[in-house]
Length: 358
Image (tube, rainbow, N blue to C red; front, top):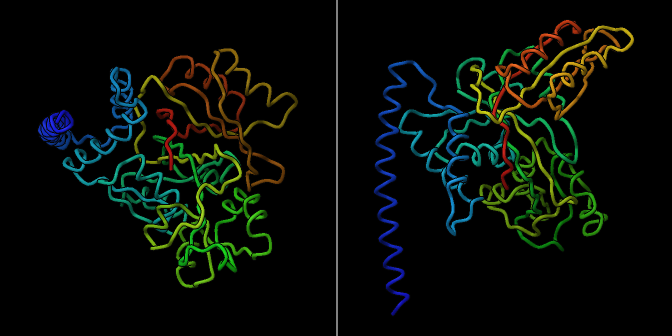
């Protein structure tokens, strides 16, 4: 039969792929040895981005281009583990969207360490217990995560990457039966993102806040009539059944996460830079701090302000701009900006993230 011959050909191709993966792993292992001799970082974010970009550009066959990144992410993750264990701290427990973002970005071969707060993520990286930390920074529906912004005021850690995760919420329970649900647990942001669905399907059911969507899933395991709004990853981790998928009000619901480390990142030619500063209290101050970016044609992708917590009605501004701090236009703009600021802090330059599905 023709189909038998085609399947045999697939088997032969798969065998070649496995052989090539072994060859790749051997080269990566040797790279790891050389890095160890030179005391170099095992993980190089801009190098990975270069690989993804090159391979997607080279793909001209029937294999979906959007699938290149997730396939090679796992290949790179598995090969990287041969160089040495890559440890990451994240705001836990297991099953949160932060956990999911870590797995999607670094692959399952990395070692993920759940901690109890965003502050603990920063602490683990600062102490050197892990190479990286992953923290949420903003959601497209609910806005900024202020605690993460506030942590950068005192911390000297650098942003070395970002993850854009398309978040999809599910209603989970032990029974899997919507009619048996008498209460729902979840994080306040998840409730806000699923407000319309809850009003339409569970209008009189009380809602109880949890510290995270994963914590909500844990609570739902203890009560037959309780449900949780969480990820499908949480359903598999905590042995819950999915009552309904994609219950969020907005179909394009993204959460952005930052990757933090002690080491700055080299340019990738597709970067953004995050800044923090406070300005002098005078007429036209805000205009003056934005003027350098217009002068050097640098695009601003985010502007945020937070109370300084040191003086009433004094604010700290957070900016994301396109470009790397090593780029000449960015250097020139920051030199002018420094003259208008009480203080200026570069939080990091890093490759711009590509959206990935939960």
